[in-house]
Each structure stands twice: as C-alpha cells, then as structure tokens.
Length: 360
Image 1 (cartoon, rainbow, N blue to C red):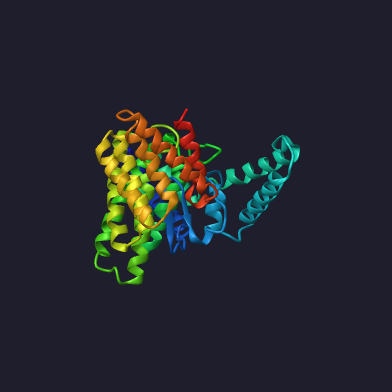
Image 2: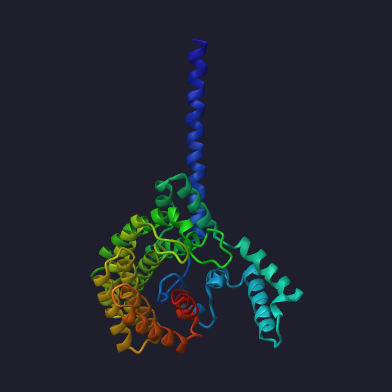
C-alpha cells in the first residue's frame, strides 16, 4: 500500500512537472515570438537567390560576409552592437582605401577584423532562430510550428520565417556567412513548413490584388518562397535531392505570384531560381526554357544583373552538349556581370566569382 502511495505521488509529481514544463515552454515561445515581429514592408530578394535585401538598407553596399550587419541595421538600427559594427566596417573601408601594398597585413587591419568577428559571433543568429534550431535538432516540428503560429499577424509570421531561414542557412559557422550544405538538415524541415504556410496564406489573399495590405502580404510570401528556392541549393556543397522538390515548388509558386503582381525584375529572378533547380536534377530542356524566359523578361526591362545571372546558368545547360555555345554564353554572362560589378544589391561579385571558378 505504501508503494502504491509513493507511486501515486510520483505520478502526481510527474504530471505537475509536465504542466510546469508546458507552461514554461509556452512562455518561452511567446517571448521569442514577440522578438520576431519585424516591420518589413517591401522585402526584396536578389538575383541568384542566396542573398536578400530590403529597401531600407538599399543605400548600403552589402556583401554576403556582412550579413549580420545587414540584418541588424534593418531590425535593430539603433542598438549599441549595430552602431559599433557599422563604425568598425566604416573604419575598415577607410583603411582599405588607403594606397599601399600589404594593407591587410598591418596590425591595425587585423585588429579591426578581430573586433568585427567578435561582435558578429555574438550576433550570428537571433534568439528566435537559435530556439528554432534547437527544436529542429530535436526533431520537434510541433514546437517549431507553435512558435511561428504564436507570433501573431500573417505579415509578422512571414517575416519571422524569412529571417529565421536566412539565419539557419548561414549558421554552419562559415566566416564568410555563405550558405552551406551542412545546414540542409535544418533548412529542409524549416523550408517544408514555411512552404506549407505560404500555401495557406496565398489562398486567403487570392482575390486581394487591389488591396494594399493584400499586395504587401503577397510580396512577402513571394520573397519567402524565393529564399526557400535559394537556400535549398547552398552556396557551398551539394544540394540534397530530397530538398530540390521543395525548392522547385517554391520557385513555381513564386512565379505565379510575381506574374499576378506584375513584378518583372522579381519574376525574372524567380525563373532563374526554377531554372537552377531544374538544372540540378538534370532537366536540361526545362532549365533552358526557364532561363531563356528569365533572360527575355530581364531584357524587356533592361535589367542587366538578372540577364547576367540567367545567361550564366543557361551556359551550364549546354556545357556537355554544345561546349562552344556554352563558352559563348559564359563569356556574355561575364561581360554583363562586369558592367554592373559594383551592384552589391544584385551580388555581382558573387556571380563573377562563380563564373571565374567555372571557367577554370
């Protein structure tokens, strides 16, 4: 009888602990969700898809290795760490502009870089992203879903998915913040969930093209889709076949939205994303159609960066079947990229680096 009493007491304590645990978890999710509400009113994404930008930050020159600064200047522009990081990057820029050989070997340069790395290390991911990563590592998809759904309005949830996906894709520890295949085990389930959420959102807003609020929501949804398509093909390492289907679906959904919203530049980029996924699974004819469509749209609006990206990947589709044509397209893409080399917002430096690597 005493044993039964003790067992009953232990069962009661476990039940109480579970209730307390659930309550604490609910509070944690609520506090993290509150920090994820970010006012992104016109989220735009870049040509090849692995970098993202926002008009509030369009006057800055962004490169992928400055991702933490880009994110913090958009979300928390007046925070102490953000201001200090910008100050350090400005000092670094000024130092690099000085004439002379070996400026990067100086003690001053190394000290600035070390200070920047220290701050960036503390800002690598947001609190929300860190918690989502823990849930993903534990395989707790229900907790991930509950976290995002608890954020509130649709626009805030879309923003939170976008920023979290960007953090997760870059969280593999690379100092240059390029996305890596090492992050794909977490990028995959997060992308699948985000894709499902966007599917639900777009059905709700199907008949609201004339509604400013509806348009803003669809733009954010399309941008999230573009990031899904992009990060399922990482900058470093090979994509996973199982994730390419998710990325392809995201690109196709983005194309539909961009066409409805009559956004030609973004539409050209969406076709590039689809073409890359088709190329990755060996669907060369389909990839050529997508990339040719992108090039045509980009040409109609005279958007050289997108035309450069489309031509670069179009060259790949001919690499084995028609090497001469591939070389011509590659040369054309390189020339177009060079024309807009300083267009950081279209990430021309990344494309030039990619083209030069492919030509070796």
